[in-house]
Length: 319
Image 1 (cartoon, one colour):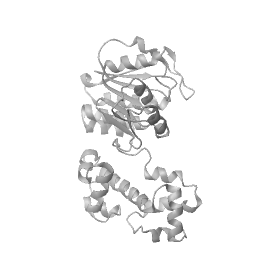
Image 2: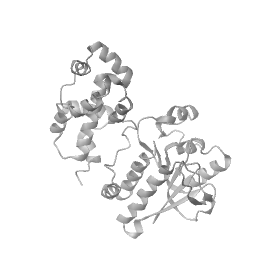
Image 3: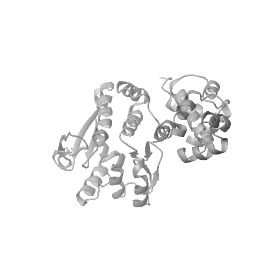
Image 4: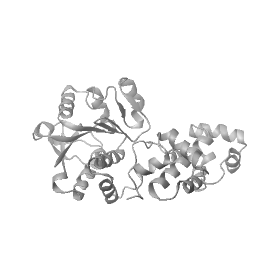
């Protein structure tokens, strides 16, 4: 059995622990006994562990962790994790005895404080990106991905992205089919690749839905993504001149209308690649790219791979 140790550096966000813990626990139901995971949860100190909810689960101290090989250690914490000397010692010792190391959300601060991320790519919650970058200049901090793997160290951007990271680990250990079975059991829509952005175009749209000028535009674009989306079409929809529309749109969405539409088309195309077996030409038409070459250039620019390779890696329909 593979021991997976969750080290809680309190206070913690309960979902940061519960999400990945559930993934590894459920994975064992799909594996022969010798390949199963043995989840172990420990905290800096024995007793009730402080969380961001009314629950304070009882945990044993990390010093009581049984001797033996640890396959994966996953740190759960907060932006101040690893500030105290005792915690840094705990982090270093846990890393030294693990084949694979990971952090959930802001627990990346703990890894960075002991130098484990120096010279590596990493990610933390988007809200702490700038703070993390300022504190740890020797770390290449990514802002967009939901999780990043660099060698044997994995970092994730937030609570639910730790579920995606854990599923990716299971896929690495036991194959994509097992990971998909776990995802379906948890009613996770799909296994998202680490390169997916913490803020997708739909999420960014929701952030500005209250803006009266564009309250219904994001939804309309999504529903009509295959149609012509020139600035004239969009400005007419919002009852503005093209010039006024372009200026106000950039203020609201922090990008040009053309870039926003491309991002929406890219996400629609990605969903179709992951969830259907439609030909690439049909996907290009349905997502508004119109031809395969424009679709290919968008994927190459955003992810560094072409649509066919993306489907090969991440399609759910193929299983």
